[in-house]
View (cartoon, rainbow, N blue to C red):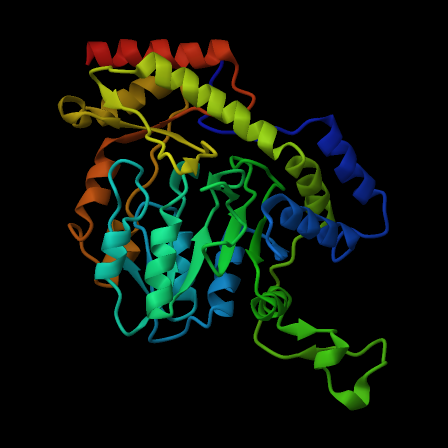
Length: 384
């Protein structure tokens, strides 16, 4: 069977047609499609404001800046994530603090968050790992008591729900970030967004996206109002703009987001049924208050097999099953160890990493391919 990746985009003719329309228009960037995409994100999630940017990493960076994160501050996040979730604090001169995970979902453990709060804690950045929402109400309660801001890293979780609310509504947070990388629920090629219900944060996000520059006449020098050429730089921002081509693709993709999530969930259900009660590995849990977007399907090898993970992983790839591992705990990365972070600091995360393998899951995965994945992993685990 042809190689099966662990994840991939689903782009159809309607998506391509929307991108082509922009290519034939007068606006390739900084045009009307960006505002349309932002309005669509708000309509989909229930948030008041959205700011589309060039990547999920850019979204994390400007959200951290808008939250006022600076030198001397601390940001609490999970070690089971892509490095960008912690790097965004370093970009601001702040210190990432890693709180351990709950082994069942691999999401940040609220009790561990509480233990790591200090007078320097400015932000909590929970990650909705694999598309499964964190315990947002508990995290929000902790943050409110300590007057700490919450930035949801929902790079995996567009289309997910928590207690009946769409992730991205910011019901339990100050801001939420999305990623639109090709393996995510929807894609713009590269791209991201920050959502918020705060007008103040929205204004700051707009500045940080575009060099700190504004053309909002209400913010300008009064003597220069009405000059069509005039703009002002009010902060040190960045060029994190997304293009109209990407935004057009995003508008088209977002119309299919729920369909994509349903397909992912159906594949996860097929895996769950096939793997129920097996002796080799545990399958993902889903809490009753959560509706997972199933961005990943992470299995956890049991004690008798975790030491054989390297062989299992290699054998699966050699047979065309494009597995991956998510993630190497951030605090164990060489760069972070140079900063003084040590192995053993988050034992649940480190144990989870030693067992985890992500199986293929994406909307275009066919039932025959899923059955091949199931049969192949059983054969390999049975022989090792």
